[in-house]
Amino acid sequence: MRVNMTVNGRPQQADDVWEGESLLYVLRERLGLPGSKNACEQGECGSCTVRLDGVPVCACLVAAGQAEGREVVTVEGLPEYAERRTSGDAGASALAPVQQAFIDAGAVQCGFCTPGLLVAADELLERTPDPSDADIREALSGNLCRCTGYEKILDAVRLAAARTSVSGEAS
Amino acid sequence: MDFLRPADWREALAAKAEHPDAVPIAGGTDVMVELNFDHRRPERLLDLTRIGELGEWESGGRTVRLGAGVPYTHIIERLHTELPALALASRTVGSPQIRNRGTVGGNLGAASPAGDAHPALLAAGAEVEVASVRGTRMIPVEEFYTGVKRNALAPDELIRAVHIERADGPQQFSKVGTRNAMVIAVCAFALALHPRTRTVRTGIGSAAPTPVRARAAEDFLNAALADGAFWDSGETIPPAVAREFAQLCADACDPIDDVRGSAAYRRHAVTVMARRTLGWTWQAYREGEGRAAACA
Image (cartoon, rainbow over all chains, first blue to last red; front, side, top):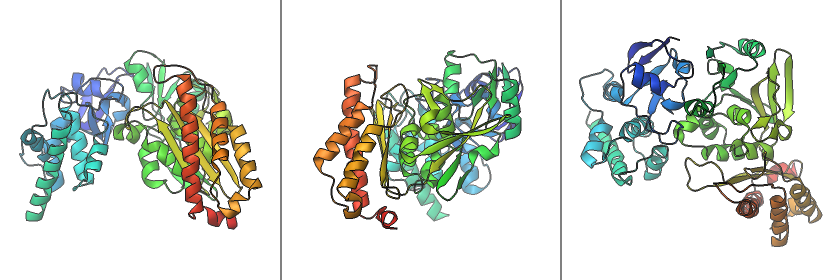
């Protein structure tokens, strides 16, 4: 079947999609967007987290046909998505604030879980700009990381929140 | 494989009547796992996510009519006052990503004995609204679970909504697992006090082939509370009564040994959860929550 959806702000069409296929497979194998990672295929690890009509979901658990006509944001579209949210239009930022914070805080080791964590963390900061540690732990509880022990990831989210609130006060 | 995409409820019923083998899919948190792992290759999927009414709820006089497609996140955020046990249970489902997609309708459709919503529905009191082109019927939730991952649906029927009694007193939910997130229950327990009728109701998950109520335990506690005029006095429940109640709850279980826990552990855990949830709910009742209803 054919599936039409908006991915990272652009209309996309995938052909010859098998009806039992996941949105994750369509993104990675048919639309050339391998940022969302394929690991557990059962919603346990969160490494395929994307926004579906704004809501964070595991792309491996969304049937491709369920994404028909919907808006999807993947890690590849995160800089533009975050920029549009803060300034109203999509500029040329290479990285979303949460991505820069992950780099600066040393929150990336092997990097496999990172795309899902970035999408989940960005959504948390959109909803809760000044999150408590409990808020961060809860928001990221569906994303597994086997390298970092999470401490640097928590640091990164705190850093992104602090930077966003400073730049928000300045403007 | 066919992907059926009904635009409204009538179309969905027509599609299910024409293709009783079609597997309904909403949040996909169970069905997609089976597809991804090649455990299931249905001829047809029946996507219910286009049907707006399934994602809605209405609060009536004594019940909340919860559309089968309302995600757990909405129950936590918007229905925690009316459906406290279900909201507490919803908080323990999977992860934020799973709660954004998973639904009570899906929990009922899958009918896993470990489904988190079941104990809360049993304790609160609920009826499942199921429909087909032949008509609509209401199934008390106790009768909905018929076996391990089996329910009372006919092949041409779909779950439309669940009618859950609004809380008239304190409710609690407790679940045993290895961590807070992403855990399939080792076992779970829900307790609801119903001051209006001066009764208690229980729900036990993952400790028998189906979710069950501990009816003998309920009868015992109802009688003990009535005999001691506890609903009027709000006195502390004697430890011996709580212990007996907890033991009768464990007696209602028929657990198995599996990778998540042994049968003996599950029985023991149910006694602990029964005693604790009774303590918590009765304390809340003593402190006034629900006492007004009892006196009215």
